[in-house]
Length: 107
Image (cartoon, rainbow, N blue to C red; front, side, top):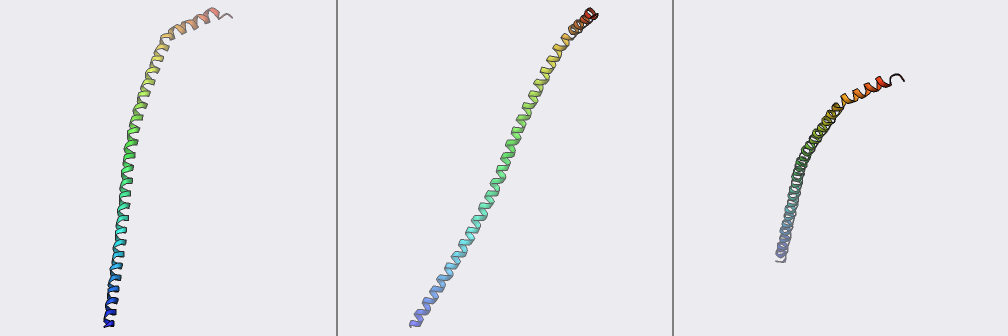
């Protein structure tokens, strides 16, 4: 009978060992699944971050391009105004130069 009890203990220990091994396998599989899910989440987060960054950069580029165009238009208007003023004085400057050359040409 003691052999019978010993055999039962051995079988119980073997069954417990099998349960432990099965639990370890399941735990490893769960850890692997969690790691894979975390990596997938990180990849998705990185993609979303790049998309947000691209949208922000595009928005900033559009804004800066608008500011450049506005500054360019203002500069063109300022140049046009200066040219108009210069043209207004062009005849007067030519007359003054002509008079100086004629009056003071003998020196």
